[in-house]
Length: 63
Image (tube, rainbow, N blue to C red):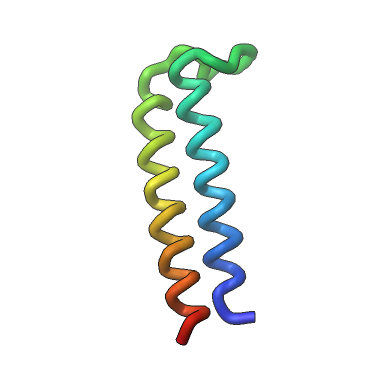
């Protein structure tokens, strides 16, 4: 079971970051975050953090 939590949290962060990015760029409407450029900056940062967490989770599973 070791490594499942980081993988799950990392995947969740990647998905949330991607949604925030497309909302910030204005591709998804119907939200207060639509066309707010700050979310187009925060989204990729969250996505990158999620990828790092996934990578660390995969590393811990190999040991």
